[in-house]
Image 1 (cartoon, helix red, strand yellow):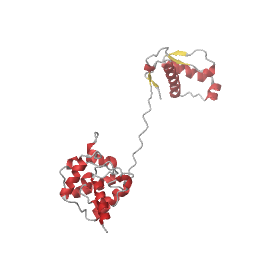
Image 2 (cartoon, rainbow, N blue to C red):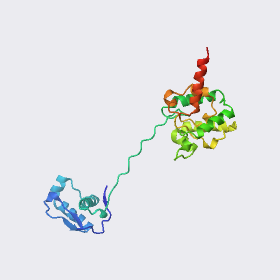
Image 3 (spheres, rainbow, N blue to C red):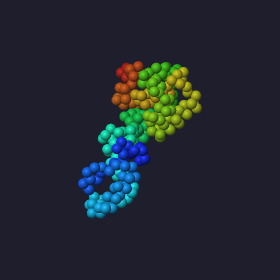
Image 4 (tube, rainbow, N blue to C red):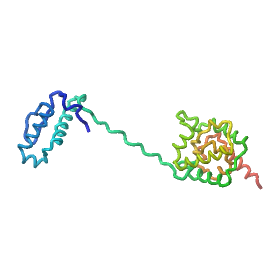
Length: 246
C-alpha cells in the first residue's frame, strides 16, 4: 500500500480532501490534521449520507481516507518524492522437487541411484582396484559433467545438499565415512564432485564395480553421460564380452 512519507510536511497544494457525495466543488486544503477534522465535521453534519455511504466517525479510518486521497493526487501529479511507493516482493521461487528415496539420484534418476546403493552396500561394498579407481578418477576430474569444474561450484557437500534430499545426503555421508574407514582415496580425490548427468557422488562411484552401475543405469541417464565417460567404456566392454560368448 502506498503511503505518505509525512503527515506533517506540507506537499504541493497542502493536504487536500474532497467529498464528492456532498457536491463539494473545491477541495479543502490545509494541514493533515485540519483535513481530517474537515471530514469528521462533514460526516457528523450529514448522518443520512454517512449511513448511505457507510461513513464512520472512527478517526483512524478518516486519517486513512485523507491519506489515500492525497497519495492518489500526488502520484497522478508526478509528486512521487512525497510518497512511499509500495513495491511488491517477487513471488517465491518454486521449490525444486527432490527425490525422497534416491541416495545417488535426483528426479529422473531415482531408480538407478537407489538400486545401485542398495546392491553395492548389500554386497559388502566391494570395490575395484586402486589402480582402476585412479584411472576413473583421472577421467572424472577432467570431465565437464563433474560439478567440481562448475564456475559456481560451492563444494562437494554443498552440492550434495543442493541436489539431493536431507535423507539422501545423510545416506551419502554414511557411505563416504565407510569409504574413508576403508582408507580408499584416489590421486584426484579433492577434484571429485558430483556427476551432473547421473547425480552420483564421484568419490564413491569411482570405487564401485561396473556391474552395480550397468545393471541399474537407465538409458535416459546413460545418454547424458559425457562421451569420454568410463561408464560408457565399461558398457561397451561388457557388450563385447557378451557377443564373444558362444
